[in-house]
Amino acid sequence: MREGDFVAFTPKRDGVLVKLKRVLDPDDVLTPEESALVLKARREMREGKYVSFTQLEHDLAHKHPPRRRKTA
Image (cartoon, rainbow, N blue to C red; front, side, top):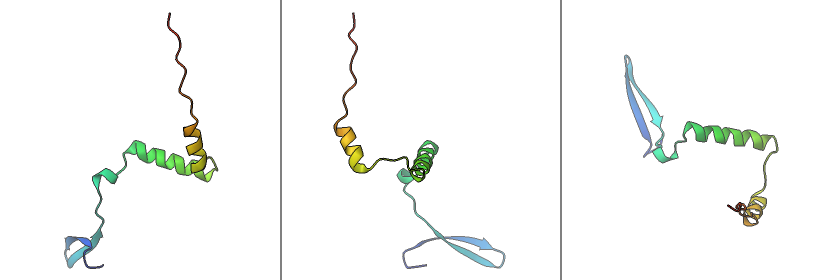
């Protein structure tokens, strides 16, 4: 423990349990759907299924907008 750490106190029969606590920003907590996407991405990266950032930037810069169908 260091000065400034957050702690939680839990009374016990023979004393008090002191545990370090992490402070989380609610905006930093992933939804179940986001967690599933992160797990999928990690798995795919382990399997070699990824593109470099440079390739991604290139692909996005050269992406053509979808063609619209002519209506009658």
